[in-house]
Amino acid sequence: MAVRTIEVRERVMARNNEIAAEVRSRLAAHGVTAINLVSSPGSGKTTLLERTLTALGEEIDIAVITGDVQTQNDADRLAAHTPRVVSAVVTNGACHLDALQVLTAIDEIELERTRLLFVENVGNLVCPASWDLGEKEMIVLFAVTEGEDKPLKYPKMFEKARRVVMTKIDLLPHVPFDMDRAVANALSVNPELEVIRVSALTGQGLAEWFDFLRNSVLPVSTSG
Amino acid sequence: MSLAMEIARIAEVKLGDAAPQLVTVAVDVGDTAGVEVSSLEFCLEAVFATPPFAGAKPHIVRCAGDVLRVAYLEVDDGRTDD
Image 1: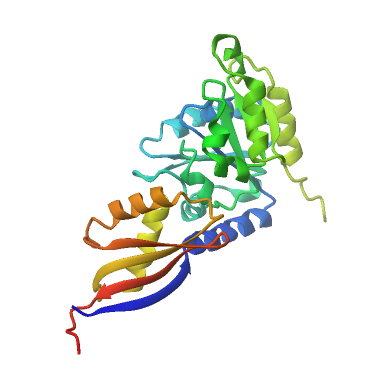
Image 2: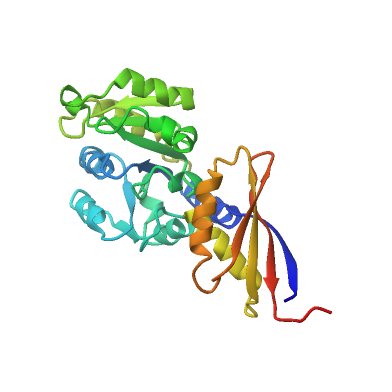
């Protein structure tokens, strides 16, 4: 047997990052702010988006891309709250979205009439942290039904995020969750993190979430 | 697993249509790459245990910085030793 060596020297994320840059460029050209929502499964991403679309849908042009391993259940749920197309990406087993999937999905979206684009990533606190989708900001949802040590167990996700949304806070009286310790753990991983606390069920804290979104959207150009 | 699958994609592209038998996949992993080496190794073994790579072994090379790259491939292209 003759074994020979083939030099490669290729960064693993190079191709994805090139495509993400193209996504970012296209979104910027249309003044679209893109937010990549990441979390464990069941943290309330879809419910938070339902409430967001209902509350802000007439005020801000919002488009959504959903990612799921199987089914387009989340996209179907969200479509009931917006007249806009909700683009469903079924990854067929992959545990994250990649930039090519987002690039393909935004072809279905009228970017010229979109101000805010949510990408609801596959529920997973590991792999999505490695894949740039071309978003402006990654936001991690952290439910009070999880353990306070999630940021310590999955530091990369919390390092890359700029904001953490603590969800399901209406359940705090019923679960052994130490909010102060959870926030301290998140800040120990990323001291720059900003924290928003919400309950999509009762509406508590949603005003702050909505204000953050309003302030994130780029002003519409009035030139000409 | 997603990183392992991307590494497999890079290897597949590099091998091309000739598709010689892949023996080793060497991956440089930086100390600050945010990658758990044992997990990546486990996933690579799983990915490279299946066709078209059956039998290939991962070789992780630790290095400084945040680098994560496919360093080189070792292949057996069926030629006999000179």
